[in-house]
Image 1 (cartoon, rainbow, N blue to C red):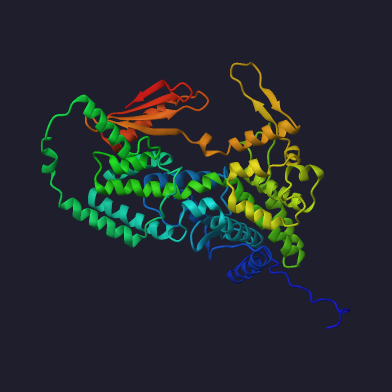
Image 2 (tube, rainbow, N blue to C red):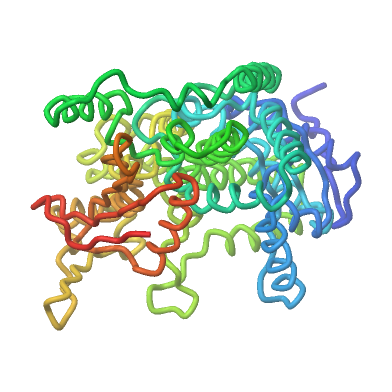
Length: 512
């Protein structure tokens, strides 16, 4: 064909708001070409499932997982969310994506064809790439095992309900759910989830060992009495063997509670394993959504530039996208903090700008990436190696701080007024960036509560220590409710001390 002849006109992938499975598949293939061949994304195989609004509400109630054991709290969440949705007081997510292999992507049947295109780009490729490549997900989760483990958990708890009764299982689950925020390994590399078959064998072996155990062994007298010094040494050795202090409360109760039976310990293990699965998501909300928004924005624009979607579809996309990444002003009635979609997407686009159109200021602040003309590669490196806190510390630019009009307030309760102590100068930029990053640190968001002492030779009491942040003690009603759940699982007296980490003095003590 001669160069003078016009190129063949590309037919849009769709020209109607209505969708069918053939159109969804065609769009998926077009998106995949851009995501894999052009952007070089690395994703798990994707399983796309179209669900109804009621099924989406059901997925909400079971923490967004395709399989889950039964518990009354999930039904309560379903009723609450359904009532709010039916009244028009809240909407539904356009999609849910599961960190598994294959990656499961739920899309709503009520979505228009444009929205199906957007959410496939956003979830099936944006989130999917982040799940597979970010170092926290690699370290703390096992996408290959989670679906089998959830099936095992569902079956195991159903068997426990048949054998021990619904109420007994519900009591353990109630307490485990109440404490699941304190059931996470935060500082050590966790082991991968056991396969369902291996876990079944372990439980069968444990059941056999339990059947061979005789309570008579527990009634044998000690060979000799021990003096106080010897007891003190034994206590120290016991603390060492127990790994005290221990911040993973559910783990400690699972392994060392004097009253729990083997099936109850396994339920604690299930709850904390699932809580651990979600731990990286709590640390990467901004980055994960920012990555997915950048990917869908890039892909949708490429589809439009190549004539694969119409102007009408592009306008519909821009409307949805703008609403998702909107950031209400601090004095707006709709303000509820910084929108992670807004900040995440803005930072991704700003990194692209720094790589392709840097200013002198950018070259000073980001000498390693400014003007490298490798925006996608730079972003992929960031998506792999950072979490929200470190990402903000590394990449939040003065340009974006000015654009978002960020400033830092010093809230001193002893003073009658707020003080703006960080403005738009070099020192202020660093202070704003550090203060914002601190808001995404799990060290600041989570309670620092640890098991610090147990008296296994006396009254078997447990002492928990809460290291206070900014001089704040615990809310008494919540502390009492939490202690009741701990006492149910431990079986003996529990004391919780709020301690000032600077002076090591107890400021307030709670007991069950």
